Image (cartoon, rainbow, N blue to C red; front, side, top):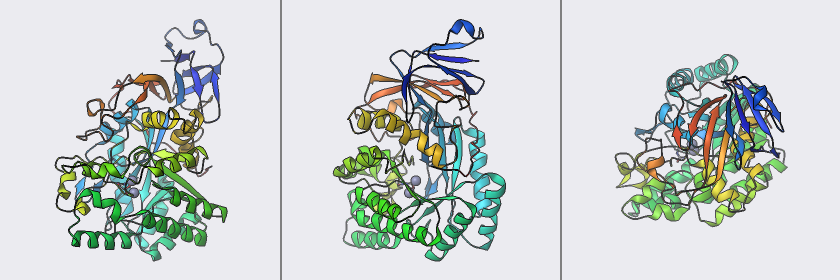
Length: 464
Ligand code: URP
Ligand code: ZN
Ligand code: ZN
């Protein structure tokens, strides 16, 4: 059904204007100052967006849904996670394919793709984590890039023995990425240093979740960033550093950029609004806030937000990694090293960025759109189909009520996880209506779309 959004304040990464937006089929076909509904087909659905923002659908560049990790599997499936995403205004996600060290890349790609095809309600694409790297893996990676549309890899410098990659393979993989024109996304922490610190702290009887941060301090992350940038300099590969948690890590990345490294930086919403005191909560509640890199001192928030406003940090993702408190997080009651890492945020990200970024005066609305949507589309080859409000773009739109106020709470969450990481925190703003390729899929916190219907996003190599 054709769709007309009238009287809205349309906000993109660069513009802020009062215009009407009309979509026929799945794409935006007209953007004009005053489109007369009488001139449109009779069955056009008209949405009055007076006193509302109209944003391009938001893109989450860092999501885990199917995630076998630390002896368990993340609790969402593609249906629950993507419905939660849509209700929160996120219309496209990039999920991490995270196989184990013995798994073949082709089989992993098929496993994740089958799950997404069967269950995803929003549009999706992948970063393919390269954990196994040998001649067979290289052959399969070449095939996945040439014939299956894989356009970004993920590597872990962390998680010793589980997901990390040797320097020899790092060099080979980054050389391959350069050859294939593929972006390497990377989790930067020194795996050996983390492992040594964990053993030391556990040996001293420091077993609670509050010791997670001291086991992987900022220096460990900064070392990972330097390491990755060195290999990027040697190989010429394009890199994207995921979930950067502190100002110093951003500064190191910017120093590498100044020296010629093609590096982009991502922040994720937990690092922008939560701090390490949350992991110190009693009755083991702190386990809910164990993620890696860990939540830091609150002073880091300002540094990260400033780097976002300065566009040094390109994107705000979630690193949505949902593990239940009961039955999963509590696997680590005896040792913080066994707490599955991750905080669910896929539904809350946009409202958190609005509340603690825009309403707090730290970023403006254009930056919010840029960081939560447009940059991900540009960096990962989806622009201008995604991340933009323009004629020809997909009609992925968020009609946003900035005046809505209600604290975050678990009862509102469509994720299957048994807690809300932001419970009770102030929330200003809500996606009132969300469209995916021209179809209304969410209204006022309720999912109203079909089961399934999300499509794989075809990507090109272009970026920036
Ligand atoms: O704590 C986190 N970030 N969990 C998910 C895995 C990862 O490192 O991205
Ligand atoms: Zn990570
Ligand atoms: Zn992650």
